[in-house]
Image (cartoon, rainbow over all chains, first blue to last red; front, side, top):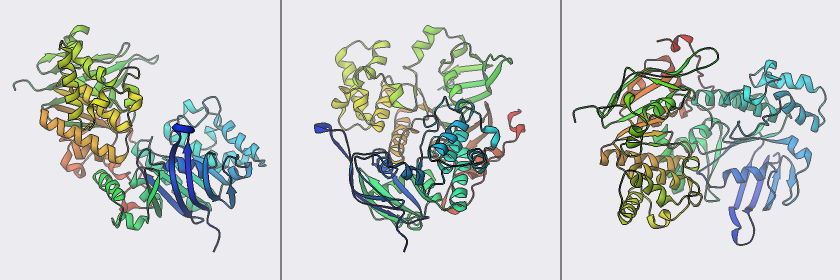
Length: 253
Length: 279
């Protein structure tokens, strides 16, 4: 049995200091197999994005054991560069996650150069094709792109480094339904074409159910239930919070 | 009631551009009573601009034109700034997407709720306070006194949106326009806020216009739905019969939603037909 792509045990995450210290995630245990498509669902403030940031090596104030992509993360220490090559993240708001003063080319090239890739030009063309934009977008600035195109650039930037794990934080919740469909199709295409583990954080059960095979449900900083998407769709859920989430979303689907 | 609450025909909103005037809303028509109307469309479809035109909030150089634009018998086209001020906040109210941006960050919630009363002539301080606390309770806030004294940053997203709704309701308007009122909220809060708006609409007999990009959500809460595409209403639907939608755009919007039956499969995407933009 290969090593899990992600294994976190006893993960506690805090914000702030002293009296204002806030315990955002309590003792989370999580295991994601290589090649799995795993969802984390919950309401605002449930800690799901905070947890994802730790898995991405972007957060330092936590305790516990975390192994991601074969590397042990250490709290309070910056993750090594090699880690970020293996683990990439796409954020919710494509208007905020791209530098407005950089062209698409520069955004992609910087990452590739930092991680010492050769044939950067060819890679940029290939990855822009892969996300359905094409080389014509290479010298555009973010303000010249629609929300959906920006999210494609963010995905291109992430997969250009050929990561093993792609972490997605509400990647479609800022997009219109028809654009969401295009981006979900793209993500599923990429997951099938590449050897990639996906972790998708969302409050939208329909989106998570579409992309993932298993989910963890978070409420107020705790993982309250883990279940397969088959069980989620069949409403075989046990925790009252998961039932509330389902009831609220059923109205919505 | 004699006159309909809202009677609109041939409403257009036009902006000048270097390439000539651009109509971002074209030939909008709506006659409504104290019912729930949904306006659905993607970003850029003109749904929010329609709402702004109904509220008299289109700023120059934008221009509103209409063959008929009447609210409760009042000709909105003939109103001056003073006339609008007498209507807005008192007889028509608007709830926007994100309470973080639409509440005044340096004013206590209580003051913000009382402001419409103050502007529209409720003079007794004690009475204003009583009505503010009453409306906070009506929007389902358990602890009205604490929220009354709170600043917006001390409230969660759901509480902030309830406070917004309280501000809009305190003057007992006849028409409430809610522009993406739940898009910043998670699914559970979204349900709660929609139920609240629905209850208030029924108990106070408001006319409600709910604007959203979320077609299934609007279909659950409204009586009739107007589907907008590039500034034009392309289809008007009975909300109970969403699946009878005829227009390819509406059908495409429904088809592209993920659901258990399409799990893991490629979702249909919209192929936009230029003909949809022509009347």
